Image 1 (cartoon, rainbow, N blue to C red):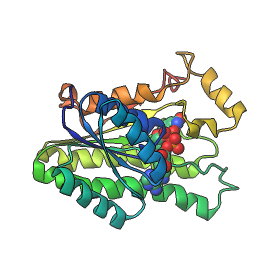
Image 2: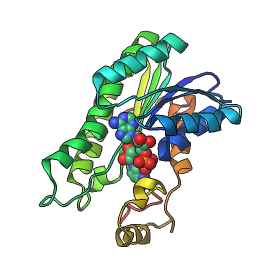
Image 3: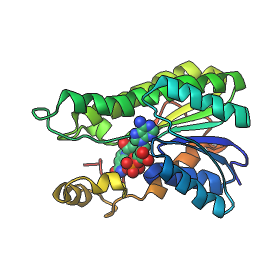
Amino acid sequence: MKFKDKITLVTGSARGIGKAILTKFVEEGAIGIIWDVQTELAQKTAQELTEKGGKVFVVTDVDVRSLDSVEKATEQVLKQYGRIDILVNNAGILRDASLKKMTAENWQAVLDVNLTGVFNCAKVVSQVMTEQQYGKIINISSIVGITGNFGQSNYVAAKAAIVGLTKTWAKELGRYNINVNAVAPGAIDTEMFASVPEDHRKAFIQKIPMGRIGTPEDIANLCTFLASEESSFITGQTIIADGGGTLG
Ligand SMILES: NC(=O)c1ccc[n+]([C@@H]2O[C@H](COP(=O)([O-])OP(=O)(O)OC[C@H]3O[C@@H](n4cnc5c(N)ncnc54)[C@H](O)[C@@H]3O)[C@@H](O)[C@H]2O)c1
């Protein structure tokens, strides 16, 4: 029960990696908060966890792209629990295309969720954490933000920016006892990765020394470490979890 009654907010936690992160924290005693645009799925996820004895609160229809939506959702969490201990900025989307074929709409759509969404949540929630003089912020980047990737200009731009923002926020928020770190997953077995063409997926897995794709739980385990007191002197870092895939 490492996170007993810690108010733990995970964006995009209705499914995939976010759901696994939320589950791990809730299993460790945290009160999990779901912010997701998929309300029905969020409620289903919450029900699954509550049936197993977990504590979960869903704020419905939270769109991280909108500062107004994030502010209202934060008010709801504060009204219910009075604090926010842990924020995991996980919500993300893909709209892949080569530079030549990428439309302005797809460029903007990905930056709106994967970058502005992270900014909106960190901006609002860090104010709560600053007042508490306590907080852990974990941003989900990606290895492609470090290596670049064919066909992902929009996604790479956002994920690389997260590496820099993590360092910047660590510098700004350290004095308030807030740790800010990022996780850069390699290929992880979720619906998002399943949407990548099969030949690309195979090529990706062939380059992984551990010989397997990652599981959402691999990422959840790293997040709980980064939110624990065992990592309290680590801040501003981007930790890669990719089975060695980027070693070359
Ligand atoms: N799957 C991978 O291989 C992989 C690798 C590296 C990084 N990541 C990153 O991990 C994170 C989770 O990815 P996943 O594979 O679980 O994806 P996913 O598509 O399964 O889940 C993403 C969740 O985010 C939610 N979401 C989307 N737009 C939102 C918005 N505007 N506001 C609130 N919620 C929103 C979705 O409804 C969904 O529940 C993303 O940031 C992704 O970029 C994934």
